Image (cartoon, one colour):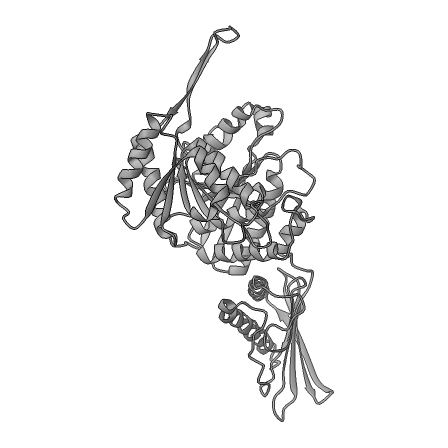
Length: 496
């Protein structure tokens, strides 16, 4: 992602632009997952604003972006974009009318496309496995072959002529190269491959190579090599482990990044970030799969590309921990073979979305039992529904005899706090009904039911199982917070 570090500010305004085809389906899923992520974290808030700019807008109004539209977009921290393109609108009109009409004025000159083989997915490369293919492709996004310069004359005549002029400026190439080298410097391999075609394109591409060599002098710890674009396709297929950071022109990277997505398993999982590294304008984040009208409305679109895109957006906004958590959830779901058909599975968009961010059930329960030596057993139940006041029931038992029972309401704010903690627990890998914390514990992430008994004399009471080693402390912290919160609720009812 960005070599420019930015601390999170805690509250973000996101412009949502689903646009065409499967765009509304995957962006809707992405917003759902981001809302869950925000709830689970409790560390940041997201505010979404919908922009209905699409090919339907173009057909009605003759333009994709209404007057003053770009000024509206500038007010946001980021843009979450779906896909543009419709069968009845020429592609050059839709691309230049919406996506490029945002990227170029907003100086989103660095297009960043990470690629890797996710857990549970397969590469078509015969021997490739998870970890073998881990690249980031950086594409010049403001000029080059897509500068929009050229024209046509003598239309309809045998001597009709058209020109498509590639524009390379020292300013744009230099800033892109510096961004690419900074990115490579922050990655473990510290290696960059500069893609070119300077053997045949003897002006712009020769300058491209020269500037790459100049910028290289600023980064002595980064190893650089150069590849002709046609040879690069062979290297990506035959020697994927030899690559890490890749920088290429607008056209070359456009093609190579689609190849990279296919080599990783599917274009449906690939994210992209259109960045303004100066942060003077909002950056735009989108899956690269396109509008895919052949599957629109069928509920089978792969939302993973959008989820990964959302993670990249959160990373750009400075929420590194949330981005890591979302990527972990994506990997866990793919690792459980909950896959859409483009990845060889049978799950639909909804099934994958609910696996990454399970929806809340109508009711949640926390059951807490604490025996005390020579004292009655205290049992605390917190029962309720999301976003509503909950009811707390506390019962005291003396042996098997109920000695007292009290109940009372829990304020909505406290319920929300509780739900945030429960949401956080959902982010940890677990089996649905598996002892994972303490003794005689049940955690069911689908129903929001969490149960545990803490027996002081039991030596296994503090053990954690089925939780990755690096997550044990976080898991115990959240579980302890829920126990403390439940006891706080009980005390407010004068029950304990």
